[in-house]
Amino acid sequence: MPRDRVVIVGAGVAGLVSAFALAARGLEVTVLERRDAPGGKMRQIAIGPAQIDSGPTVFTMRWVFDELFDAAGWNLSDHVRLQPLEMLARHAWNEDSRLDLFADEERTVDAIGGFAGAAEADGYRAFCRDTKRIYEILEKPFLRAPQASMSGLISAGGLRGLMRLPQIKPFSSMWSALGQYFRDPRLQQLFGRYATYCGSSPYLAPATLMLVAHVERSGVWSIEGGMHALALALADGAKSFGATIRYGQEVSEVMIAGGRASGVRLANGEQIGADAVIVNADVAAVAGGLFGGVARRAAALTSSRARSLSAVTWSVVAKTNGFPLDLHNVFFSRDYHAEFDDIFRRDTLANEPTVYVCAQDRCGAEPNHGAEERLLVLVNAPANGDRHFYDAAEVEQCAQRTFQTLERCGLHIQSRPEATQITTPGDFNKMFPATGGALYGRSSHGWTASFQRPGARTKIPGLYLAGGSTHPGPGVPMAALSGRSAASSLLADLTSRGWSTPTAMRGGTSTR
Ligand SMILES: Cc1cc2nc3c(=O)[nH]c(=O)nc-3n(C[C@H](O)[C@H](O)[C@H](O)COP(=O)(O)OP(=O)(O)OC[C@H]3O[C@@H](n4cnc5c(N)ncnc54)[C@H](O)[C@@H]3O)c2cc1C
Image (cartoon, rainbow, N blue to C red):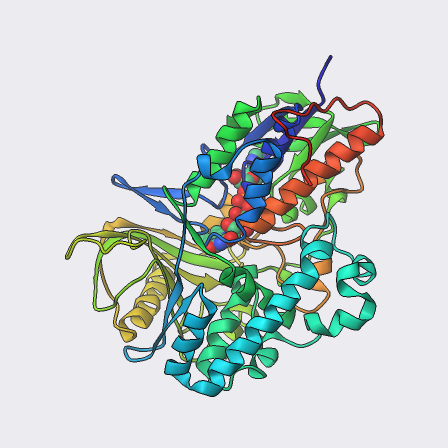
């Protein structure tokens, strides 16, 4: 019996999750990826023999992947080696002011008490309680739902109607809400940074996004071989269920016949027919017409002003000294408000950036004294890579400001130019066309923003969207949830039309 054919455009985490779930159900899946490796933003950069994770580094919500593998009759741990982290991250404001956050709440309470006093430690306890509640209210009716809808949220049992709406704090900004838990501006800054996980400013994002703090407290894992190893495991899994993944294949059009998606055309002219198509490229590329004029109707164009953050990153092999790096480290600027004003209002790189450093050899091990180690250094940036050219002088100035923040906090990095690879918003825009280099879809500014991300189904039957720019939002596990939603919506639609032939494989009956 012929199997339903699905084409997936893009081997980002969402595309891979869709491919894994659908191939496990017996569909004929072809993934077309323009680059030469899976993972999309979960990429690695080679510097000599060193492989540096140069996209996401903080892995949370492993249950999303546990469920995916379980549904296919597999065990995630057999395919990806995960290690839970005791320390979530190390934070620094200067050489004398440092604070570590731990997975264990009481350990963090003690750390905050020692750092900022008993009242702030009490504030942290209240913060943990409230962020847990926000997460619990939203997990089922929002995160797991295929589409965001306020009415769905209100009618869901979890929200118990409008009564519980204020508890998710949609109408106050994250920054002002944080002021109700913490008087110490350093703690406001530390927890406000979670807005940037969704590419947003803590001054403009709703306090609902504080749930990210709960997600991180619920567990951060390191992955042996780096985050890219997860992409490889998903790709291998999909292939072992029969999916085909073709690299170096740029899709230039989603073909439509009889009002529904009928396949894709590649940039080289080749046509591939399909019963359904999932696009894992950024929604902005679909809305911008990069997949043809008809497919453009699948997503509404959002203003470039609504774009989320981009970044400037340095993937580097270097010697460090002066600061006891952990795996995840954050070095804060002295004026957080000015930093976000520079990026979102003035559309420029921050005059003094907050800097994230992922010291990838520091997972439970100290590198040999004086030896070089692998680092990813990241600062947030405006998503203007399609309208602003980052010349060498501007990149050099950004480097100076970035490394000055690190020096001020005591971290000295000695790197060699040939052992450093820089990525600017312009480079990200080339990798993810039509985005300006925005890495998290649209920003989550204002309480309605989260409802404006498109869901899996589109106006065009047979055409689905998946990825960090769709519902429920950015981040590896969230994009994975969108990939799962695209797969389950597609399966439900094929089945309801009565011409689907999904086959349960190895106990795999559900994509939830
Ligand atoms: C520097 C950085 C740091 C981050 N840090 C974290 C973190 O610590 N934790 C976290 O959870 N998340 C983090 N994120 C966000 C996270 O990486 C993303 O939200 C997630 O990986 C997005 O996945 P996606 O499914 O949207 O696909 P993407 O990664 O966007 O991949 C889409 C794929 O589609 C392909 N494609 C596009 N157009 C075409 C076409 N026409 N033809 C063929 N192929 C095409 C692209 O080449 C790409 O491979 C970070 C992102 C970046 C860049």
